[in-house]
Amino acid sequence: MTPSAASGNAFLSPQSLETITEYAAREFGLSFYGERARELLRGLQAAASEHHFESAEKFIEWYVSTRTTAERIELLASHLTNGETYFFRESSALDAVARLLKSCSILDHIRIWSAGCSTGEEAYSLAITAHNVIQERGGPNVSILATDVNPHALHVAEQAIYRPWSFRGTPEWVMASYCIQKSDGTRQVRPDIRSMVKFRSLNLALAPYPSAVTYTTNIDIIFCRNVLMYFIEPIRNAVLKRFSLCLTNRGFLALSSSEGNIAASTGFFQQKPLGKTIVYVKPGASHQAETTNEKPTVEFSLPIPPSQHTHEDKFPRREPPEAIQPQVQVRQFNSLILQARSAFDAKNYEKARRIIEEQVLPHTELNGQDSGLLARIYANMGDLELAEKWGEQAVTLEKLSPYLRYLLASIQIERNTLKQAKTNLKKAIYIDSDFILAFFGLGNLYRHEKKTEKAKKAYATARRLLSKLDPEALVPCGEGLRVGGLIEMIDTIPQ
Image (cartoon, rainbow, N blue to C red; front, side, top):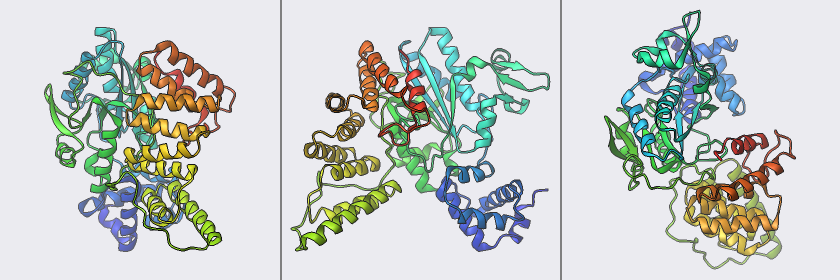
């Protein structure tokens, strides 16, 4: 028997409750303050029981004393996240998806993301909606990414077997046409519909996105319904900012009615009526359901977490250097750059920026690699203009570095300066003819330009180079992307 929240309080000190509440906010973005503390206590009791701790207090002691890993976070996630969902919930939002799909060219490729997909009913509802449109028109191509932080929910979603409760209020034609009845009263989604959805583990509060590594670049439709309401305000705003960076200009974000005002108040989105529902689009962006001539954007990205940092100048101002002994100066600056790199690796981009700008730049010029580091810092803070400036500085100082050329091209792709990006990718390949990601990026640019044969050739070269490597190895300069993952991405690109 799971203890009630009240009885749970008797076994949990106020200090432990405060500690784990802060951890939940930091690691999941979830708010368990006030009345929601009861939900947190129930989840902790269940987690402690499942993992054989004698009490929630002991579980918390262990949890906060161990190193943060994806596995440790997932261990608690299944007990803290709300999995309430069912098929064709809020059908008016699905109608908006159908409207956008019908407005596209049948040769187009539309990417949909179900963010916080829980056990998969929403993702499969999107797939069924898309399948109906494709059956009617013969296109467009549709791929669906479904993510959640809860590993147990993702396991259920991949099995796609559901009890009657998941179909409450669902139109009969959905169950008759798209599900297979099983002898125990459950239904399983048809294999062809299941194949339209790729399920991935992703923590909206911590994961890098938009990023090719997490398949979250250039999304046309994001469904994130009844998720934001559980986040603390800073995480909620950060997620919305990153969603706006993930979306193409023709795309939209679908939220629950209770979350709409949150999105509009941030300035990252504005409301737009579409059919019988309200969707959220980037300010000034044309909507595909009304304007169909927009070309899809490039599917290539650097991780760009949100930032509050702004900078008025293209380059930071430097005061005259202080008198420092040369040998001391070299050791000091090398140490500071190492500190900045460590901060960058820890994703503390603001700290890394301050070290370089406030402690190094007032005294000395940066070399090419260090300029590249500052470019990466700005890119990951979302300031792409400054990132490009420092990227250009880096390749000016080290003209024969293929990595710095690739870094600059990646930033230019994000800024939509595609001609310059193509030039730098070609230069990276000229310097290093085995640079896998440069070929992959060039293929994406050619596909964007509808130069199909050139795109195929670039992708084929990237795949040939990948085939020589261990599928579990990391792709050089791939920000943690594995060889097998990039092969899968190439193989699923529409030709």
